[in-house]
Amino acid sequence: MLNIIGSFFLQFLKPLGFVVLLLFITLFLIKKKPKTAICFVLISLVIIFVLGNPFFSTFVTRSMEWRYMPSQSYAQADAILILAEGTLPANTPRQRVELEGQADRALYAAQLYHKGLAPVVIVSCSFSRASSTKTFLMELGVPEDAILVQSGSSNMRSDVRMATEVITTNNYENILLVTSALQMDRAMFLFKDSDFKVVPAPTDYKVTLRDWEAFTVVDWKAILTNLMPTTSALDQTFNVLWEYVGLAFYRVRSLF
Image (cartoon, rainbow, N blue to C red):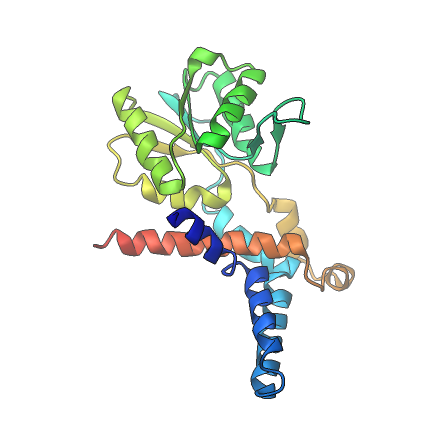
């Protein structure tokens, strides 16, 4: 029940949901408080224009993603841990497990496994993702007996807690942590007090070096063609701000 309530209110914290809420309230203020209504409309426009601007989205995304960069030579580890997302189960009419952008995590984990960097892949995720992620890893050539799954988590904090139990039970001391670059800083913070060594192996970058170089060059054609907000930029900006808020929350919570 608490999850349903939380999910309901979360809709209105997202930029688009918040703007819709403001505009809905504005409808009841137009006649009695026109100045307030105008302010609400202006706030809505600023939120959409700024947070949905591709240049702003690129800037804030890089500020979080590039805190951890992938290594060209990882040391041998005891296990690869994936905070799994991005796989869709083969429910009708799908013919196989299908993929979203975050499935890069499983792809990268399989690549690290085949390089011989660890003998085991630990999949940590919600129940709905567990089976499809395991199936996808097996399709990529990872043996079933080399995959450990914990599927009871509902958020990153429980992901880390339950994955830690698996790691401790098996006496693993060196872990390669695979997750999206955007979430790596928050994940590493949650592992900071662990009794084992965690090495970040980020993937699923939204901003590449070429993107950033194009962003920092004054090109009036690019500026004019990317002036208006887009839904993809709005979603990406929200995801980054969510990471900043989540990281700040965990830092404050760790003080008490």
